[in-house]
Image (tube, rainbow, N blue to C red):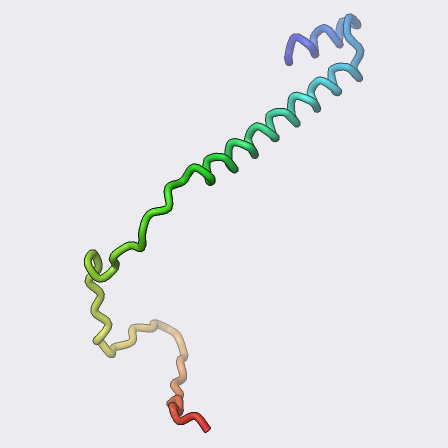
Length: 82
């Protein structure tokens, strides 16, 4: 591309041609990148459901809240549906 700019500055190639070639090269690169991303997502293997119970150990029985400098409110929710 630098050579094209040098030729355009020397008057060998018109500036409009340099701009047109630059726009075309840019569009080709953009389309190539988009197609590459789309194809890479289509190629991803869909694995079966991850066994969370087997590989995780989560204990949420602690009832201490640790909010610093935060005002919180609580509300009892009624489970009775009318």
